[in-house]
Length: 296
Image: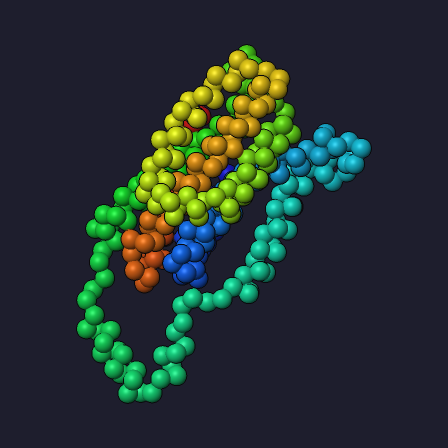
């Protein structure tokens, strides 16, 4: 049942690609970095705050016995509360889509006279064919980078919670699910502040290519330092883990935002939806391998 539910969630999750194309089209050229960063911030916050919600709200009868009784509905179904909360949130998000402005305007064609419409049809037929997306090297190179680091980030997300709650004798930190939720929440808040106030300036200063390269290079020593945190304890452990989690989140979202900008700028407007669709599909394939690879 759990595997089927997760499969359906992934199969029905087709909005990321059009949202990225949409964010580019509704923003001015000088605001595109902010637009795509907000999209990726929302995605990144979901990946961080989602596990935090699970950590805080899962098994409420055990974590908050003074509020939830063992024989109550939430006591008999310990994972109902987090699922119910995110379902309610998704319902409000769906309703908010009603007020999204459309960026693809086709109604003007029907208001034109027959003569103008005929001329437009003739012009479209004489246009040169669109360049194949698979032969667009700037696009494909950014997609490859995007996919590789999506695998990297997914593997990190999958293994982080397992590592932190594992016992010290197994190389973990012996954290509770609530402690893990606090770490992820702090990382999510820092991510929000970074994307809103810092990323646009960074992109304008370094450009999407250099910012992606720097973030990719800095991620290596950050991840490599995690196993050594088992030698720390108390305040030093908490400080090191919180800082590392915040930096890791910032670097990850910098890479994702940079590659998303490169993908959308490598194609004309008419191909942005298809380009983002290819990127998201390939990214999903790479991310499907990440949990198994991280577990091994």
